[in-house]
Length: 458
Image (tube, rainbow, N blue to C red; front, top):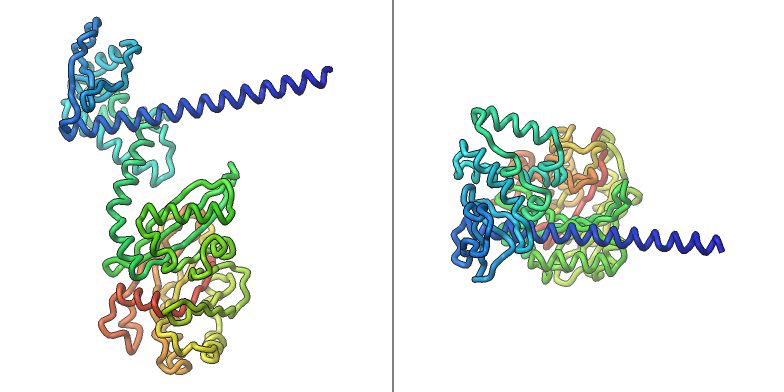
C-alpha cells in the first residue's frame, strides 16, 4: 500500500513539474511574441507608416493618459501605447492597470535634460549594436537587464558622457526578449542581402561543409552548414544554417539540409555542390549517391585515393592524408605520392589540382596567420615543379594558402582567405588571365582535390 502511495506521489510530482515547465515555456513564448510585435510597431512608427494611427484614450479616466496615446494598426487597436514624451512604445492591455505607465512618465520627465531625439537614437543604437554584440561574443540576451554590474558600468559611462544629465537605464537598455526579436530581424536582413551571392556561387562553384556535434554540458546535438565561395577575388564563409536536432538520422539530416537550401533558394543545385564533412557515411545516406562528398576523417589511411564519376564531368580524385602537425607535414616526402598519382588510372584527364587544407586549433581564438605558412607556400611551389615532371604539364596546381577562420564553435577551421595574387609570383607558368572566379569554376567542373586534414597548430 505504501509503495502504491509513493508511486502515486511521484507521478503527481512529475505531472506537476511537467505542467510547471509547460507554463514557463508558454509564458516565455508569449513574451517573445509581444517583444517582436512591439519592435515591429516601433519600426513602423519611426518610418511613418500610414497603417499606424495614434489616438487618445477616450475611456481613460486617469490623468496619466494625457501622456500616452493608443496605437492602432490598420484601424484595429493593439495592446500597445506610445509615450508622448519619448515616443517609446509600451505594452498595455485594456485590463491592465496604469502603474507601469505612471512610473515611466515619472522617469521620462526626470530624464528631460536629454533631448527626445538623442534618447531615441541612443536607444536604437544600443539595440542594434547590443544585438550584434550578443551574437558575436556569445553573451546572454538578458545581460542588459539582469547583470547588475554591467548596468552600473553603463550608467557610469552615460553620466560622465552626458555631463551628469539624468537618464533612466530602463529607457535605453533593451530586454532579453527585445534582443531576441532583433536577432530574427537582423538574420532575415542578412540572408536577403547575401542570397544573391550564394545563388550566383551555387550556379558556378560553391563548396559546403557539414557538421554535427554535441554540446558538452547539455548533451544537446546541433547541425551546422557553412558555404565557402569566391567573391571579388577573396574567399567568403557564410553560415547557411545552424540548428538543434533531436537525432542524427538520415531523415533528420535530409530534412535540415533541404530546409536550409530552400531558405537560400538553391535547393535545385543540391547535387551540384561540393560537400566536405567528417561524417561522410551519414550525409551520403541522407542524400543521393550523386553527391560529391569529401570525408575528412583522420582515421583514413595514408595515400587513400578515391575516384568518383558524375554525368558530364571528369573524374574527381580525393587524397586523404592522416592527422599530423604542421611541421611534420612540411617534412613529408612528396615524391611518394606524386609517383602514385602518375600511375593512377585516368589521372591525366584531370585538368586542375585544388589544394584544400583543414586545420584544427587546440584553443579557440581570433583568426591569426597560420604559423609556418611561408614554409608551406615555398614547399607547395616545389611540389608544383615536381608534378610538372611526373604529370607532364597535365595538372595545374591551384594554391589556396589562407589565414585561419574558425568554423562554428568546435574549433574546426578551414583556410579560406584566398591569396590568389601569390600564384603568379610562385609559379613559372601561371594560368593566363588568372582570376578566382574562373579558377574556382574550373576546379569544380574538372577537379582534382587534395585534402590534408587536421594539421594541428600548437
